[in-house]
Length: 92
Image (cartoon, rainbow, N blue to C red; front, side):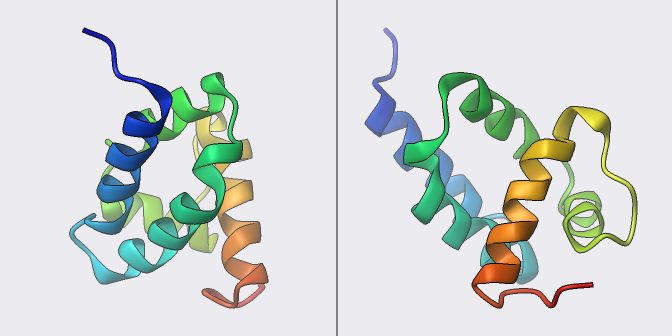
């Protein structure tokens, strides 16, 4: 049985809000609420893969403390830009 798009977005939103660290909850939760519906299928697939990454690594990538893997760089740029626009993190 395959999951419809709305169900998948809801599942990924829950995973975004319940990361395990408050910092990542506050970065990925609002991003998922605002942007998951606008992502194309390939980017949504990549977002789901990214959610399986370690929170400490994700936070360093989003905050610019460590370089992001090329695979995630465009997606993380979107997350970072959203966080900066919504003042979740400061611009570097």
